[in-house]
Amino acid sequence: MTIPVGQEYMQPEIGIGKLANYQGTQADSAVAAETILFGAPVEFSDGTAKKLTASGYVYGVAIAKEFVPELTGDKAGSYLAKEMVPVLRKGTISVQVGEDVKSGEKAVVDISKGTFVPASSTASSKSEIVGVFKTTAQADGLAHLEINLP
Image: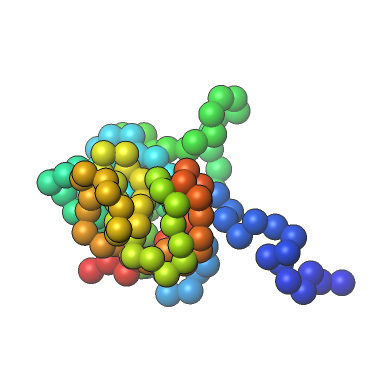
């Protein structure tokens, strides 16, 4: 017998940097200039992907690998320098939020922390609006972020 309502039996957030669904998804690849965490906002400059800086713009969000090579330690997951990074430009992805967010709120990046926050945040260094939260989450939790970047 199939499970009629999957949301009742499992969390909708699969993991940080994982695609929430495959509908209307577009991703590009870029070489990492430095270590980039899964689900982190990424900027693209000088032909490489980098962590977002105050002078940069959000190019996309780093998509998580399906596996990680380490067997012990923290399972945060990251791409090392010189690795190819798949960067989501259009679609819905699980990201870590720095503040409480509600479904439907516009999303920006708190550049100092590298997390996604609502546009109404009082963070001192914020990016422009990058998308919309599709789920509600508490601070330091995971939320689905829908983006459609040019």
